[in-house]
Length: 400
Ligand code: 3PG
Ligand code: MG
Image (cartoon, rainbow, N blue to C red; front, side, top):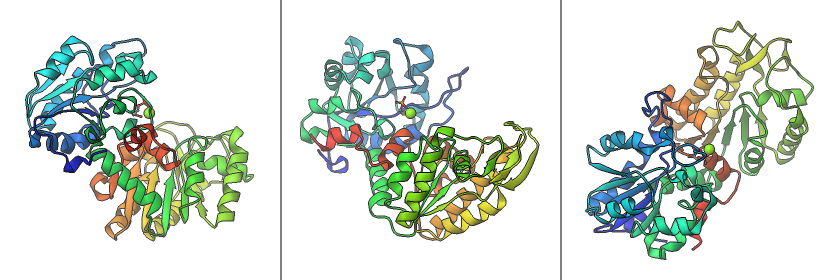
């Protein structure tokens, strides 16, 4: 493996796997969140600045049977060019085949080519070797900068690496930044280390909580998943979300935490609503005595207070998952308060990493993205990294 910043790309064609799986407006195909695209610009610019050329490949969405208009990467060409300061971006409407090879072959130093959605071929997700080899022929050097897709063992994210010699494959700057931030939290955390875990389901977060029990001093649990913990302890949670088949898991996690001396913080009170809607009637209640017909949709004022104190006293913070239904104004106070506490702790020297689609959307919405230490571009990938799994996109470059 070569180190990206040490590599001189002059006269080379760099084939970069990026994660341009960005949300598009259903009608206009306009990009509604370009975070992932913006993140890769320094990688692209470094290569162009060296006098190299860039071939970008990505997936978009989950197309089922070949090409689909709504999943075409042509929708992002204009914006990509803008992000690159007006540089011309060529587009190949097939990621392999004659047109792609011709366009790649005639690419000159300083030029950019974007390939059509890799997932228009089933071979991509199957990790097909022949398909990976065809892609590999387009570039002289392979750069994996798709952290968001690093948990997939696909042709372009993992298999392709074997077709490049050791000094012609490397991570890009997004991947390097993601991995060094995650490593800092997982293995070099200054204590107290608080993990804030939210979201709807306990089942999605069991593995990450188990792994964090080995590392964190405090785990704050918010969002819909908190009510499964309350129910498991015999509380009345009304109509709040609950995974009945995870009650034992929740109890187990609490027991393990106690045995390990990790402090689990559940939201003592909740903002409750009589329906899951922006115009619901709203009240507050202790989280273990929610009346029938009502559901907890955000953490309450007491929980905001307790959680903020824990966060502000922390030196390392990992945040994955919102505290409530922050998309609706009536239920965003908890997530906003927690975001503010993370920002405050960061300003006082803590290292804070925020990841996962919803928590990232929340810090963006509240204008806090540049006030935390690192915002991850990975959802599933970030979760799996923190579960302690080896991500195929990382292993393919590290281990060959
Ligand atoms: C994501 O957004 O999670 C990544 O781009 C990976 O996409 P996938 O979940 O469809 O594999
Ligand atoms: Mg995903």
